[in-house]
Image 1 (cartoon, rainbow over the protein chains, first blue to last red):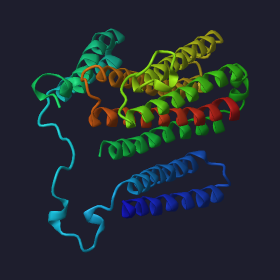
Image 2 (image 1 turned 90 degrees about the vertical axis):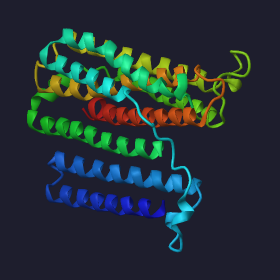
Image 3 (image 1 turned 180 degrees about the horizontal axis):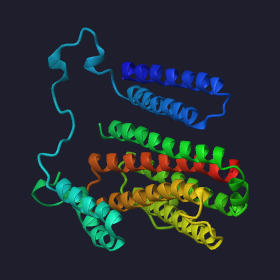
Image 4 (image 1 turned 60 degrees about the vertical axis):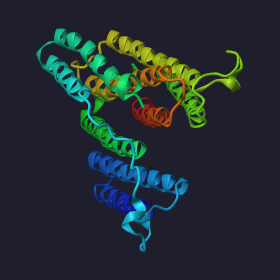
Length: 133
Length: 192
């Protein structure tokens, strides 16, 4: 994870420097760009720090080794859902809710239980029935 | 994998709040006297207490994470034996503190509304309700996530790695929302 951490660190430092230059040139009088640059730097440093922090706890990955072979990385990458219909329900319910924001609040009230149902369905999908893990 | 994805998403959330902060500062810099007359309606002491509640809720959440990392889903001793509490108990406590924060926020809104400051009254009202409102929506989303994480601990006898990851990821979100509130509090109530 060292390369990822350094990459985001460099981009973050660039934004931090730009924030100082921008602020100095605008006499610290123009808040939008200054805040944007500062939080843009924070965005990069956040990812950089997390990559460094995770990399410290895990062993060196085969992709970090210049002499690494492709077959060293075989095995499980993680857990991936084979299929799920819940995102479709959730998307539909959320779309209905946001239409409600434009059309009228009564539609939002009708859509909220559907959103709740779909999110509960998605979250609990792998804890019941045939697909339980 | 889930944790890295969550951090990248939270980093993009940071840019969302960057937009809100930029809006606040821009409108403040052009609004002139409006800010001095409107910020006098803020109750800084009350908001500070509310902030404290949210920060403490983050501490309870982190204690729950330590238990989740140790694979302890629920308490192993009596209810009053705090050291033997599991993830579930600490998360319920964090939930209660978070819910108190949102309720306190609603009370603050009703006070501001009573003083004639609303979303469409003037530029200050718009900025006040937009920034704190979007934050309150995030807290509410976090509360719902807490409920789901707590609910999942009841579904299986064994506390799985999958469940622990979910709990840790929700804690990342909760701490993020907490830090954003501290920045918002400093901007709206202290800096004014």
